[in-house]
Image 1 (cartoon, rainbow, N blue to C red):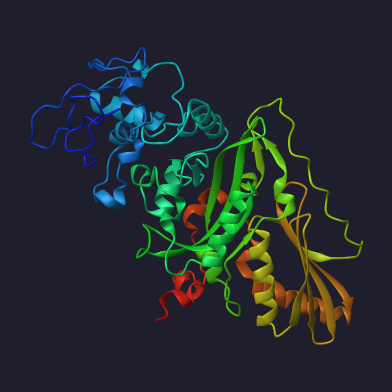
Image 2 (image 1 turned 90 degrees about the horizontal axis):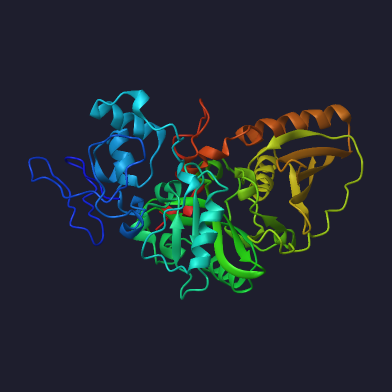
Length: 438
């Protein structure tokens, strides 16, 4: 629905409606196309049904950083096309309505209804699938983009607000365009080609690459991307991509330069249904989603082989991606003057084995996935003195630093460094040295 508040910066009028915005000191706005919730007196009368006026209007609402003006909760609710409890309370307070006059029905959250842009290239089935998928996520927290591979160019059809903040494009600017809009000069062409190959084969994949907020010329950031196909009765309908900003984490690497990659591992082809809420951890793991609850899932890959039993030291309940954790282990080993090599990357699971030697101590470092979806780093002594091994373990722990702490994935759109981090003020300067090179 349109925004009808005085001085609103969104300057949006509904398609097919005579309603216009009021500017400060201007003439009165036309009728609003929004249907008022039942039981909530507002003094307004909806002239056009919401469905006919394209229910979602969030795509054209500029964020505060673009408009330069802070908007209150009621104005945000009207502008965004979503009605929240906060926005309802704010508008009720502004209009003088009592709290008891609000409807008893609980207001909907952003993730409960997918408001699709009118220019989104979707058929009726795909629109239903978008709504079905969005009902399983928290659209206020997850950075998600959905594309339509059945349309020419695999265009963007839906994005969350965190995606808009992370990538620097509004929904209206992004809809109908390919997700390549965030790529730039330092985006690795080989990685881009590998992504295209995986999508053509309808395979899920995990990607780490350099992207740019607002497109090339904007600020660069490290994007940890998980791409998953969404099927209906075995037929590809949509692609779901989950984004994580890893700029700060990459910036903690001292001895190694982060690398861009695209992996389409066998264990990513695990089947997953949309019959339960999807957590941040599960969204970060590529999979093949099946929307039809009765259609058989893709056969699960074989579990990774059991590791030999031995006494280990280490850390668990980690949430950073295993590929990044393996890089952090290599970087930490280099910083303590240990020799190491990537001994094995198990194709059937999120497991990486690193062999290392520090002085007379030989050890094996394993990065693996736990049963609950978190990750762990464990160390096992292969040879050498026990006291020397424990000394090397303590050095490794100090070098790994914040990688061993739990990071709230809900805030991963813009990861902030922990309090007191020595290099937290300059994450991109260290993480992306090549980006500023001539």
